[in-house]
Image (cartoon, rainbow, N blue to C red; front, top):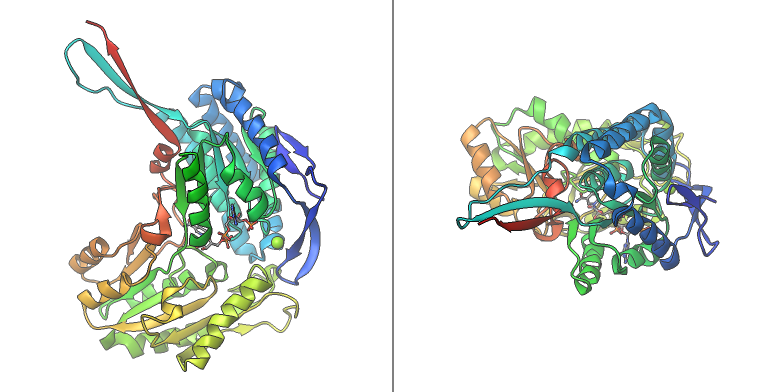
Length: 478
Ligand code: NAP
Ligand code: MG
């Protein structure tokens, strides 16, 4: 059975209970995970508090913190293939995706390593006889609840930023995706991170996760996951007046005008829905196409979608399995509801015959004429299902783009520069891409949502402000 990682040590779970770890490619159990609870969370918080409240971590100069983060980035790269293999097995990620995730994780620590000694305040002109300065201080102990879809990437972006700002961290990964993160915590210890700076407790969300959200001793919570659980986290944190960053779901539109360069747009549009089998918060899951180009774009996409191959992660095809049976049932439920509603199925990819029957495979699917109010146009499927619909003009495109509860990312495809900018300003989303699309890419780019996609920003330098508290110091010198 795996252990928690607390105070730079492997710590067995206090209950002795375990959770089976499945390989999504064949549905078989291959490991057992410690099932953490409130006791384990309390142990981790004590370790983090000691590190943050006058302990070795809090006494490090920012430049030294940066050097440790940089060492960890290098260690992740040095152990890249091992980490990617763990992630491939644990999460069913095709090899290329697992490797990209390990690389991105290292890049987050590299980026934030360089930022540690650059988070500085200001002086403020005030009344004569006074000097005023602002300083950024860490919250103290930050809690991080991580989803299963991009464990290494989201760990890098969330924990990397929090450590850079000087916080000690307690991390609760999703029970479906812990193995790579436990290994990275060991690497951090080997790199010389002081005890208690980085702690991981594994377990279920409603047990270990809820205990973390409810715990006294956590000064800030970074939550990445569903809007439903985001509400629970925010309510827990509100009871203790603890700030929260919520990185939630999306139903992000890809908006294609008739003048778009389709040679460039189409491969990006396909990738934005099949990357990680569609299990991406920023997946481009709605395709809005100008009416005059609608059928042309659909038929060009049809052949691309039909050519897609799904199979075991190790085969490294276009699409791997979904994370687990309940996710497969959910995605297939959307597909059968769409069939019952007589929606127009344009194309589907195919599942490789080598795929084990007990694996969690679904076919990438393009469905057209999806009504705005349909579940497929409103709800996050979290699978490789692209819902297409036509729009008349710019105003109609804006109205459709904004017609969901979410606002995470949007893509606009047009050769008309002014229109691209107008759309970027009018669409309610945390990131807008013009003539490109980045589902998750770009550690330098502040990321986060509006509306039910959440609030607060991670990634980029901006994240450091969220992971710190500004203090104003007023000095009367006469
Ligand atoms: P989820 O069910 O909300 O779970 C997210 C995390 O919260 C997991 O670690 C989960 O643990 C934990 N959790 C569940 N219930 C909890 C509770 N009552 N208290 C505390 N923690 C709890 O989401 P998911 O299915 O793992 O991830 C998919 C969702 O995440 C999608 O909606 C996706 O869009 C969103 N997401 C957003 C971003 C972004 O940056 N905006 C990035 C990636 C994913 P267990 O899984 O162990 O139960
Ligand atoms: Mg797994």
